[in-house]
Length: 68
Image 1 (spheres, rainbow, N blue to C red):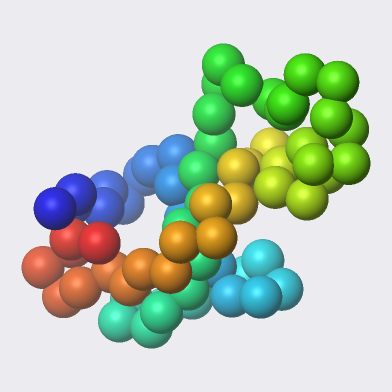
Image 2: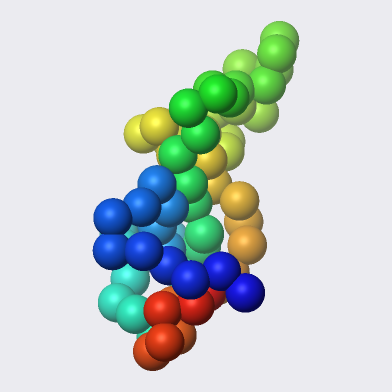
């Protein structure tokens, strides 16, 4: 398990990219300072990189103890 931190490079968001409250299910997204897209695949990059975040398509929730 991974404990979520108050200040982190990852978020849990709804379908519109808004942060969801702890306990609600949302998509796991994170900033990646080393990878900004797929080489020679601009359409695929646009699908998964938005506003500097990589959208994983993985659904998670932050539990009361801070774990994802």
